[in-house]
Length: 464
Image 1 (cartoon, rainbow, N blue to C red):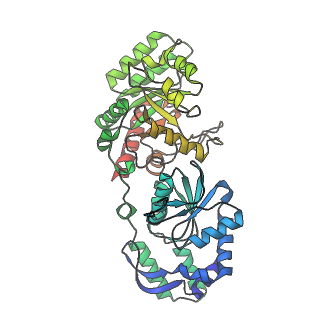
Image 2 (image 1 turned 90 degrees about the vertical axis):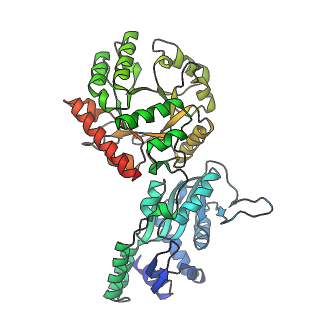
Image 3 (image 1 turned 45 degrees about the horizontal axis):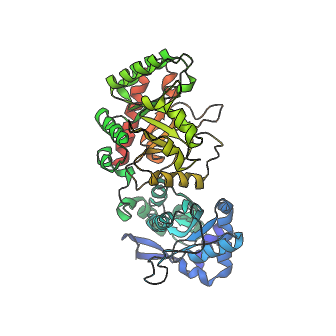
């Protein structure tokens, strides 16, 4: 990597002076990487280093951010035999009028290639057009990260960025090789420290749910029960959902009574309750009404439509008669949502797009197809269960994120835990699910209040 940095300096791809960047900030260092197209061996070295940094085989497409990164993307494409697509900056006014050129199918996964990242706005412009064409984007490989906020912005929008060099690393290499003075190095370091870019102002997403308050998002929700949940969250100042995974009905009722003031939703697995009786549901509904929270049955429906319809409406549990929300897999497509329609209520469905369990077989194509199904059936969908910030521009959906615990990183059965702040800010969770962190506590009320306060504080921090 040191040799790459030196070569870039030698071919005058790195310039020092006073330059204006795309985002309007003046900088003492400028990268003119367009010149590398005249140095084929350097281009090949750059591509080889990128291939060592990222596993291109995870992706079925490659796309370079226009226009400097296009030659790099082309070499990556030919070296790995991975098809390439190209994004136009403006659609043609004639012919097909397409923004994305090339051969591709909906749901394919595309690796983004870029030269330099400052705010991340150029990558997001490309990602947005690719996603509009139903292409999945989750990773980007870049030559240089200027360390001015682009990486975190991309992460917030579901793009994991890998870089060959950071600005700090580059300055250290050039200084150690005697190619720049300490004065120049210090000037650049001060500049980086003092000029972090607010990517949201540079690339404001339309209706970015991560930056919108729940009070503003209510008007975007198509599912009435999701609206009701947001109203409760605002009124009680809580985005805490507790997983009541007890096998004894009395334990669940006691838990609900104890933590009710601090939660917006209680999640059950009704089929693990050993002593189930219809009276249990009656008492549970009364507690929920008293403390103003909703009930979610985490049934994870996954079967042909008729079977799901019977599981939802019939049998000993009669889930449709009491559950405000249910969870479902998208494996069987739209038919599963048809089966979960209840003319007497407006039960909200949370579709599973990702899971918190280690080794989960959900892939990125499945995740994107789940989101696409949700967008097609908005009135039924309350939200999506996931571990990363999906559907950024659809604030009417709620992101339900399980796997929250303060004092553990995982269990022996593959469950992975994250802190409240990580789940809400980094992973994009709107409603966070806490289970054993509360249910195993000797003082469940105290722990519920603690989690409620931490999660709500993280939400306020996120929207601010």
